[in-house]
Length: 351
Image (cartoon, rainbow, N blue to C red):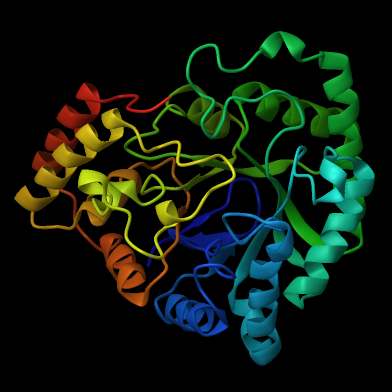
């Protein structure tokens, strides 16, 4: 396993990060325990969660994933130091989380304390803002015109961001969190947090967790440029495009227990013809090069030096092992050339 520094932090994270959002809905405690133990045994030292998990989120499952991780920590207290735990505070518009309110200084303090309790730990290594308070173009809203940026008022955002940073500093000083990061952010948001932290001597954001895959590569080049210049670690989530890049949803299939068999908060927004057309060709490329479609999607991401750690998730141990094995594979120029040809044909397959 390869390791790299997480942005400007002192954390050295594995090239693979264990995603956990299915735990508590698609997976139970026993499944999670097996996945965590396998991850540690194979050199994976970071694990990503959030207060809103499990996914698809629901009021009666709020915090389930953190609780499952907390149960593992309680049963394996000496192994806590082997894991770098990432968690996140949810943003606005989730009715059952702080009445759907935005991220504020007070909500940061409350959310951190809640996560610590559920995780059965004294500290969180990386605490992230799950999505912005302002209008944003993420999830199924990245197509032209789907977001109205004219609604964003800079002074209002500055005031809120400053309040958030001050609350994060309070948590850092109290030893509750070690570092802070962003998720589902834009270059403007990244730069604002960097600027305010510098001006007011507050915690610097050390990472960015955004969606990135063969069917969602829009972070190149501008978000990546902002991360590189500001020494921010880039953490791609959904590298398999919600599972569709594995090929399992071909021809309208929705296997029982799979992600697409559940109603998601944003709907099954990747279930579009352009996606299926692109995946069909990626599956052919994978077959040509004797690897699985999932491994093809993962090795493509892993080739980029600006990727710090790819967040992978799995509902079965077979899937997890297959995905982890991808990071030990050598990537040929011929494979990358074939992948690039498909990507050029389908640069934005869903909107």
